[in-house]
Length: 257
Image (cartoon, rainbow, N blue to C red; front, side, top):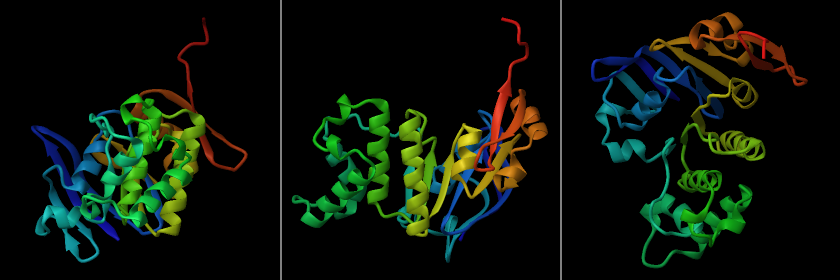
């Protein structure tokens, strides 16, 4: 389990998260929601060890402030919003960078096969020998996700992993996230802006607002019109899809055109 206890995060004079208490369990996908500037990305960065904090963060027998950062990060696969590569490398080479610890002057056949297998599962095997600088934003995002998976993480931190993807690739990537989480018994914590998409692909939702957890639980418990109206300052109606999951539909202020 990953446990955040009485966690407070400040950036300068701004408190972005205050007294957060959350327990993340293995084999589940958690999605953090909330308006812009509510500390979603800061929470992931704090778990990864990039931001100072008060309180405690524990994973099994390790505690962040008592562990060396390299040791703490070893089981974590982190994909930030601005992940990317500036160097002229092939997509396969970028994926292989996920295992820097195992790279030598000669990449082993086993590691090459593992990287190629992950790319194939994500539907990007055909990009293996393409220069990553010549790929679309969505293709690069899929390559970076493959790099994260090659690290064989126990914890996945994904900050807006589908922001540059079309609907087909959004669904494909999120299906893979769920599959890997269940089959590899990972803890997956991701940030999404699409509330309806989060309802489909999450075991638990965590709604942040004003530096605090405003709701936590399954989608029906968290996606309440009154709470969303207040935090996002928009009017929404909550519909239900054919799978029985909530669909959040924003409403225009006026129907006049």
